[in-house]
Length: 416
Image (cartoon, rainbow, N blue to C red):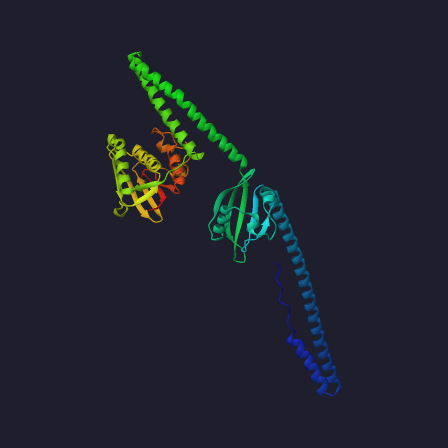
């Protein structure tokens, strides 16, 4: 950046010489006064002219430098605009910027291509001209309140994943950036995967059942030598594990494909919770684990609406895991609290705990933390828990630390 120099002010010495010369010429009438006065006057005038010339030259140089800087800034601005336009034009992800008046301020060719002719995507166009789907308009409205959201927009033949990102413009007004991704192919692949898993798990159940029946017939009929019974028991264990895995895969597939439908019926907490704990005590007793439930007194008469079978399944998975990974003689605690607008279910154990890096993936299909891999399991139980919680309009979380146990939390909408 060029700084404007301080230009010299008219010299007091030069002005004094001009005044002195004028006085000498006027008040001294003899030739010496005229000579001295003329010399002083001319010297002062010369100095003033010289300073004026220097000042003019400095101003000219400053003006020239400012003009060069202005041209340089304009060139830089043009290059940056060209770069931004190039980036937007080559992005495969669609981008739409909505200003504070919910009008289109910017968009790129990818957005126009993804939305096709079904949207009137033009500069200055209104958001309702671009989107007409109620869910999309609701999510955009939420973004203007500062809440980021992500959802799927279906416009045949495409499926688009949209994200609404709120941000503050330079003038302080609220704007919203929309990003659009074409996930049509990913959805088709996911549908194919889910169908394959569903069909494969269904078809595998028949041969697995046949293997078990054949093994039972061999054992009951006495066709196995004494030294072969251990091998037969290993077959039973493998068949049981395979059956459990197929059942979990089938259940998860039903949830993911939307084949599972929940039936919300009235449930009294004061009855449901004790029954749940009592049914699971047989898992805890062989290892001398104490299974307790703590229900706030005000919640005992409360009636909520939920699918009792699926809620039981969800909590059974959490409690069974807690029992399975807790050391002998420890305690597993189930707590139910009112945290309006949520009903909070907490399952706390004294197990080995889960590292932070593993906790981020613990609800993924088939993922098992290193600290839990020595215990039998399919790796699908927590994935089922997560999907069931979402189906019920809730969410599941985890707080854990290695060596200090784990606490799983389930939040469900509190409905009377």
